[in-house]
Length: 522
Ligand code: FAD
Ligand code: SIN
Image (cartoon, rainbow, N blue to C red):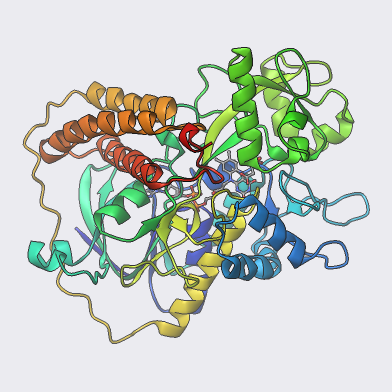
């Protein structure tokens, strides 16, 4: 079956939805198709807690300060021109969110109640209680559903991008200049593979936290966009920089890990070790509000020194009523585990949270593949450098989806005709494969990555990871070539590819920076 559109959007988080809304408005007579695996709302976006960093009132804050904070957090590897472009656009993008119906909390004086997080010199985080992402996803989905020229296919899993390789065969795939013509997509309910063709495609498939055992990312964050882009030979960068969030709730058996927002530390919470001592002073004068890579490494060191599986977050000294008002979801979660935050410390440990690297894009979100754009966590824009400043990623997605939409509005080519695109060829011969093999392999990827490619790495650990991943790659290839295609199998393929890329990029880096830290370079 073929589905033809002008624009194909892969992914329904903030990057995909905001691009689709803008493009639908810019091209009322063209068809925009969104596909997403699983349900419409499931995404990293839905779980965002802290909010969106935006300089709004220039009497209270300045672009210069936000730019400076971003550059410091990025540990010298940000692209300064990108940082300036994103931060200066933030006010306009926030106004758009407000127009789309997103509500942000205000204080008793009717002014926006701005939160603070690690690495920020000012309170500048717009939030909706501690469920900002849920509010954004809700509002954008509502708006998309009201837009007639957007078609939405949920439970549709993008398997691979269609380029010259599929259209003209292997010989043409050797050409360096590639063009995207859409994607092959698994209808997860009908178990049928469909061909979605489009003149222009936006990859907005989000992150890859699921490569690790402990992560704040939901099950859908399996690095699919990275896998697809890598196979299509798009250029990637910075894959070694993984952000571990310092304070995921330590609750063995719960996966994904529940996040205790950094905004809680911005609100005044203390970190304490197993003995109840505050320890951040030993590591950074900014204490609990140092950038994330520093706090996560400090916690990791403290846990290793004490032989403990977690440290604690202490909010017992804070105004309880004010705390519940800002963090009702976190308070409820603690209550459900019999943690009374008025007197009990909250056990927390670092968890894989965000992928700084990804598909290289220019300021218009264009990738190295013609007509392929990328926005959001799957992309590498140069904003984050080696370590993302808290609450800068929702903003980055909004800005790059806006820039992509604007670029297309100026450059859309009505004359352009797609070549004839072949349907997917099913090569599966074995329909008896045991699903449990996939589960075992998925768990193995996570164990390898957590044991050898975590917060602290070394050459020896990386080599071990590489060898073990190679065995998994070979097993997965055999399965992929013969077994019936399924979401589990495809996700595993992308998890292995993403893990491999994180390891290979790590092996090439020879200096510690932000989200990459090796014992060999201390
Ligand atoms: P996502 O929101 O992850 O959306 C990706 C979409 O692509 C999903 O719909 C997914 O199902 C779909 N998809 C993936 N693969 C395929 C495929 N093969 N085929 C079809 N569809 C596919 N950032 C901030 O700025 N502020 C915060 O407060 C904040 N808090 C966070 C809290 C948590 C717990 C987490 C996990 C992240 C947080 N982040 C925060 C990071 C931020 O939420 C993400 O970086 C951002 O939402 C990414 O948006 P996105 O649109 O790129 O991807
Ligand atoms: C948080 O609320 O701590 C997450 C913020 C982010 O990842 O930017």
